[in-house]
Image 1 (cartoon, helix red, strand yellow):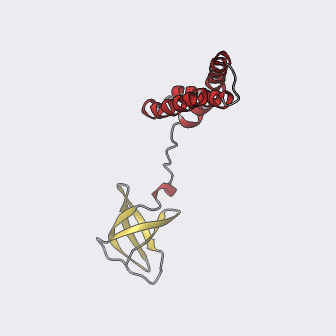
Image 2: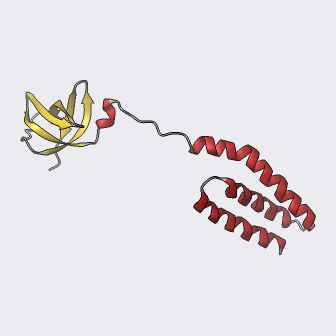
Length: 142
């Protein structure tokens, strides 16, 4: 019976962690789950409580700092030209064998087609396939 109570406590604490999101209740849920495993061995109540306290404290001291460090890292902002690949842009000067121009990310870029035989009219929407130095390599979906 004691193991079932600890399993339910672990589930409730894990669900509550979804609302809080600071890994505190998750560490308590891990301690309750550990205690449920120990309770399956038929240990006395005082041993279950001691297991819960010790295991929760261990998870709090050793696992929580790692999780905080791992999941709270700021996202890296990519401002390189490679970040423009995949964007849909507008052709402002027709793109032919000699190239053309597109408006991308608020500036004007030289552009050429991924397929050299293709021509793209001004005003069309194209997708950036690659950045080749100062030239955007684009393609148009048909």
